[in-house]
Amino acid sequence: MPKHKKNLASAYLGIILIWSTTPLGIVWSAQGVHYTFPLFARMAIGLAVSLLWLAFTRTRLPLDAQARRSYAIAGFSIWAAMLCTYWGARFIPSGMISVVFGLSPIMTGLFAWAWLREDAFSPLKIVGMLLGVGGLFLVFGGSLQLGGAAHWGIAAVLAAVVLQAWGLVAIKRVGADVPAVAQTAGALAVTVALSALSLALLGNWPAHMPTRAAAATLYLGVFGSVAGFSLYYFLIKHISTGRVALITLITPVTALFLGMLLNGERLTLGIAEGTAMILFGLALYEWGLVSKNGRRLRAARLSE
Image (tube, rainbow, N blue to C red):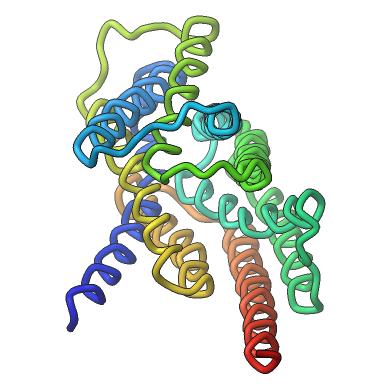
């Protein structure tokens, strides 16, 4: 196998592994401490690693007005989405976090249609959206069987999905010409400041952090943040959107399996049915997106 294909395969498997384990890492990192502390620690570690990577690669960090606006939007959306996720993760199984985040492409498409006037609708994509929404209702119903405040946890993670999608489209709308690693570092700098504020106002600095929570936080800071973003940008640049989109169909299943295997999480029938409907809806949505892009590409070639 050629070297570049090996690199792509490694990156693809790497991001599946990272995205599959991140929800479980979030749940573990908040055990024994207030949820705002692992959020702050994760982002601080991620910022330190990204700054070291900037220095190692000698990548410039743009500080013009457009770049600063892009950092501010990205940093706020990451902080707000992760604050909702860490809060909600206290009430729901880790696998459910990945399932709800599977709706991100659909939510991003809606924001892109509203703000960027991108064509987000086709028969397949509309059916996919409706199935995703229907699956979400089933998941909500299934969460009631888990007891406690599980439905509030799912609502918080859904809010995180909306905030993340908003941030992605808002960054694209700004259109700053910033290298991916610089964008990550600038955004994390804003996120760290906001996370420190939320820790000071809502949480506390723990006198002791359990070993597993500390290890999970370190893992998320290095791999869940910096490495995950870097691999994602690398794949987007080198392979088709359709192949990247398949990751969002794989990781909810693997995250659910890991949650049950490593954390003793249980899956109700309603959640299982809702998960299947969400994944099927996402598959139809992505199929509609890829097929439409393919038709546009063929039409453009014929017109040349």
